[in-house]
Figure 1 (cartoon, rainbow, N blue to C red):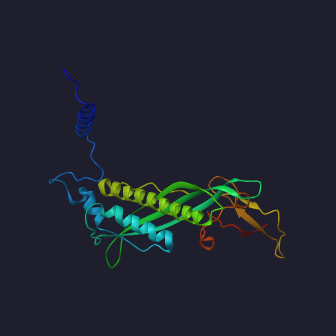
Figure 2 (cartoon, helix red, strand yellow):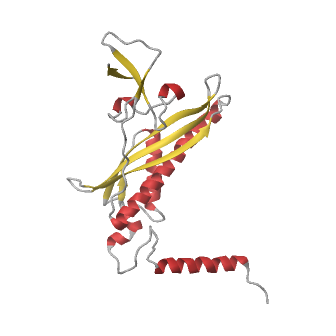
Figure 3 (tube, rainbow, N blue to C red):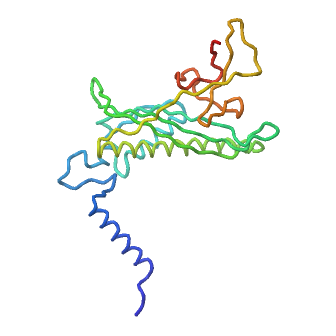
Length: 242
């Protein structure tokens, strides 16, 4: 007797597995529950009703485009029910420091805080959450144009991943109305810059640390929007009275 093809056996196993999961109560995150379910059960229709507000700068534009693509799915957009507002930034850190003070790799940490509102004269905040991702790229200082391309590609990858995670969190909320996990930023220590002198007011310039606990002056960290940093995320060069 001839043995069944391997592909047919795998297909039968996958079918059996999906049927068993369905019997245990597992259902696709982006799928509906059938004709008897409520309107909120049809997750793709709910996601298509989300309007993504403008996000500043080039990285924000790419993030918004990825969000629109993920939220619309395979169908047309109908952004009339909700408004999604996203604040996002990418922190670049120079690692693999060489003896000539150049870096062989850049690590990018992307963060986003999103808020979902109703569309109304007085919008109501329905839910909010946070998304994070870590990526990186190798530096090639001897190839200027290739380096620019690597940096642009890295930014797009971070934006794409952040958009996917926000879309997934929104889908979970539409399904269960469970409040998404939110990022808790713990106060970070600061380091005195040993290369400067205090000014006439006895103020000492300090360096904040990154998520790895290393001061910016040690690894060439770039901080986004230093003037808008919060108290728990002090900017490089903040003046602190002694």
